[in-house]
Amino acid sequence: MNYSIILEAYTTTALVMFPILVFIIILLIKDLGRYSRLSEKIDNIIKDLSEDLSDKGFKKNHNESLLQHISRYINKK
Image (cartoon, rainbow, N blue to C red):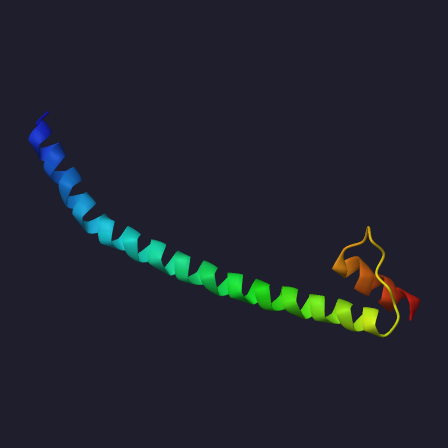
């Protein structure tokens, strides 16, 4: 077996695949950034809802999360 042929094939494959892998990684990072911003927006909306409920007199227990606070309000109504 001729190792120079194998090395040449490997080098050619690496030259072709490297830009493709870089492109995929860039798209992945861009997509993850979009979901991160969306998650922050949802978190802010949940915090605002919980604060609105607290302002209206429905107090949050110290041991419950924001979602539990909102869920308890919905179940009560």
